[in-house]
Image 1 (cartoon, protein in one colour):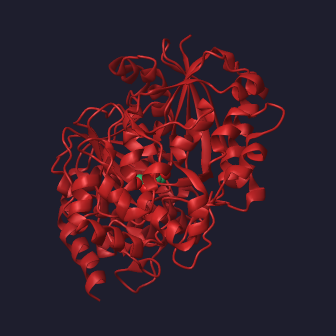
Image 2: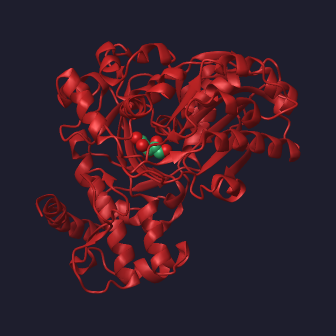
Image 3: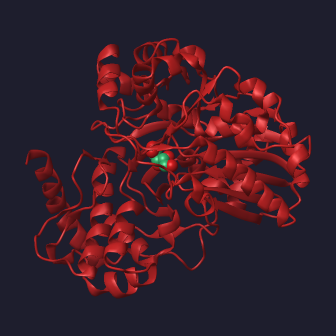
Length: 518
Ligand code: XUL
């Protein structure tokens, strides 16, 4: 059998691809959009902004219902799941699910006569899951850092300073604000290890890629750090699954999926990883040398690293590379959030965003800039009331579109300097990467050619490739089949625009710095 299934549970959707690893083709792909397909959860973008301190949570039952819906739709489309040899997946990073001690028994006792949501609802010790967009834990970050002797130590141990969206500070806040439910919690899972456990029918490990996004794992031995555990919450070590390499097998698929959807009982499950680590694999960037920009709900810039190197400014992160070694990652919260806000405000669609708006204005936008921070930004950490424009004249649609894109990528260039890599090409992925106008601004701001992959959804493809790697597949072979740049779609930088951006960069940095001093 040469078929593998890769899933991606992201902020707004749950997606699947089936890869034929011998022929090198994508056999099937399918996606459930939480807002459109599961509108009854009232989370149109996959989360609710409920709290007073910037809390952003999702309903884990919605994720479970999405999984049953996705698989039943694949079966309805006559996709034969019995031919799948292995399954793995990718999850939005940092999000956490809190489960009572009955979770394992409930997984073992699942029956195909009912669904996951109904059978697992009673296992939740916390009804909602904080996700990566939640920025409500500044207090807890400060407490964790103080307890271990400062953020320098948190960073040297875990690869990141204490970060609001990371799972450790989120767990601390839960333990402080709802101690009874915290003590009722038997296991805390990441989105990735939660889904992986459901497929395996038992609690499985957290991989080194996603585990590093918790402020709890020590990068030197890739295991939970006792000081960080103690600084975070009582008895935390007992509530976390073990850490394990990303290609670990977790046994044959749960009988639930065999009986309900026709999977083979010999189908192997491989533990899941985070969406960015999976994307690193999908983009063919697992070995140092390639820089990837992913344009999603958040924008991220990441690259494989031979040895961990931490960001002196505290914004970047070091995660485990699913292929072994490390990866760096910088996350910008206002990615598609900001692009969509401008698109809506000027009543554009993606075509007119590029053709009628962006093309009306020159590189550098005649000096009109903006800080496109519709939500509190994390790189740099700035809690604005909304976007800030450098000029108070009314921005035309062309000026606004150019301002949002230029500022996003100038901000990215500014905050990726510490990596010390001068890429000779940049590989881009994510929904917005299909837009040539956006891709061309990246090529011009960074001054290098920009390539895109032949297949959409690098995290989902990467998850499928990881399923194959877990079965002993060869990374170079898989990359040659699934991580090829799309032919004829390379965008070359325009030298005049590159010169303009080199001149604009110090002005953008000064504009950004003003916000911290005003
Ligand atoms: C990475 C991060 C986001 C999420 C989005 O640190 O917070 O990219 O992984 O799914």
